[in-house]
Length: 446
Picture 1: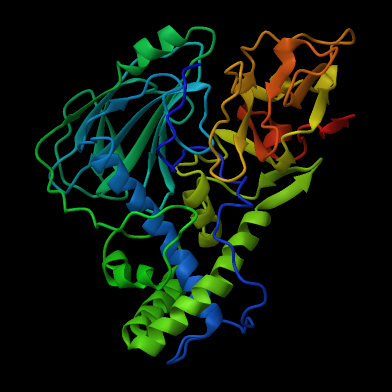
Picture 2 (picture 1 turned 180 degrees about the vertical axis):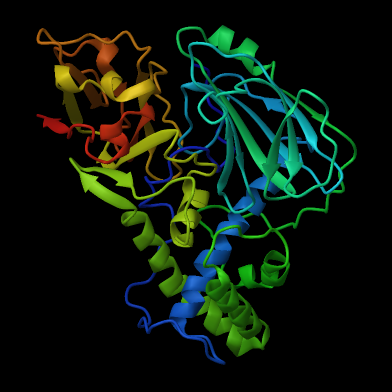
């Protein structure tokens, strides 16, 4: 596995390992009255409006990074080498290709996809709020799993070239992640990856993306997010139902922030207290916890739960939906402690995943892969694991190899700091997908 660049904060995988991501919030804070429309927004309305708006601002930040730092161009694919990504919680089982796609009422974009046999793949598209809107693969398009497609704005009266499968998009600009499973043949995955092609069928009109200042996950913006509120509300539509009330609150809080120094100061104070506390609380309560593993209640498509969507965009941007993958997270582990995890022979991880499974360790602050002496960043179905005599599998997480542990079953951890584990099941079976099966608990090794 190649060394990982440590320059980006965005990610395309699990967001549920985020207990330490938000800025520290002061203790205490304002009360939480019920939300209601009023001339002066309540503290709760300010906090909620901030969490809603922040989700869009995080996408705009990543869009700016993509174009300014990584040299993206509209409707042009960027093929990443296996392992050469710098996201939070990266999926190291796949080769990524990325793009920003732009369409309009008169212009579609042609997509050509190769035939993929025997390995997982998908063409994944998300809108400007971080919602998954399209997956193109053999599961979603069984009668047209590869070949040519016309990516078109929904409702556009355009003539699609013969032989292309039309795919309607709910927005003019969308983010793409194409994933090809590396499997036992990473070179073959790379060859397939480079057969994905985008060709504009004309010249779409592309509005200049809104520019938000650079900021880090540890230094989130405060009241200034409401300086961009009008442009955000009038720009990229939020396709989810039930957003009218919170969008009205955003407009109300934006008016307060513009009303003068005292109004702006109040908005900023509430954000840095109650708003950040609410963000941390959302990170801690993302779903059901069993065996110390948390399974998020939703991922990829969030319905009216804009707070979970904002957490996703903060610490694991571009998450796919539960039809494709089930994620589990184990947070805040002591990197100096050794742990074992044993899967019974009847419940091996491979039995729960149609495509592949993997576990990765990331640091507990920035959610990046952890450098280690043996350059091992994950264990997965391709790892040369040794099974116990009864057919069970024991994985060990430790800073150094414990005595008696097969080296092949060891995932190194960072002595002296905290880390998180992300467990993935791609193509989860019904037990995992329905929340009836969780990874086994970790057991301390003394």
